[in-house]
Image (cartoon, rainbow, N blue to C red; front, top):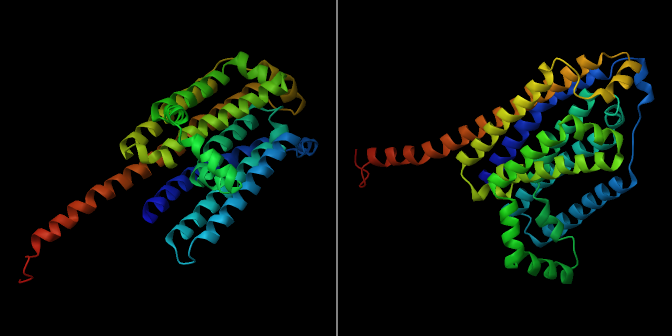
Length: 321
């Protein structure tokens, strides 16, 4: 159990570390210049409240679970790795939503892409690896926790949850969110209307959480490594295709960026190409390397029984040479 959890955590960290250099590079390119001083930290009160509540609930649930376990318990050590993953994902999400990157995304498409990829490829897999649902349950009072548990175990809820978190369903929802919101009319509506922008971010994050739930979270137990690799490689293909379409487009997909880009001295088409490259190269590479990591884990698990069988065949049962 511990080995499997650590293996999933290593796969998740590979995604984050793979995307991070590309994000940093792109952020450095778009954040250079004296005009960047006008972009500061932004705080939506309701988003801050939700983020604070999620962290407080996780900390409360984690402490209650830890107090119930033996100091030498394996489950306690595993939950420590979950805590680190959740905190890392929470910090990544907070930086994407509150840092100057958020205000800059209204002026530069490339900054918007950095923000979205940070949410979907860094924050989401780390949050899922932290297994927050079970920990949040323990933050509730005992009576409420029992009631929620009964509702969760009900057949209707269980059926709906299994349907939404099925690998194919999660894959389709995530793909639909990516392609749908990057259509010019939808993307520009998000730029014009704050509530549409909030809906865009929520759909990106929620569908990414569902997707990673089937790859690195609790949902990964319901599928084989082969299914996880297929999900990752096919997502790499279609996100790479979308990034290529944006990068190689002869004209602007999102004319609303013309005025703010010009005010910053940035060519709008070059900015669009940079944004497409962020989705095409580092983001697709994250899916690719993650899929290769799962493939390596799968081969290791397959070779271990074969090696043990071979050794047993070589050594006689009576131990004689």
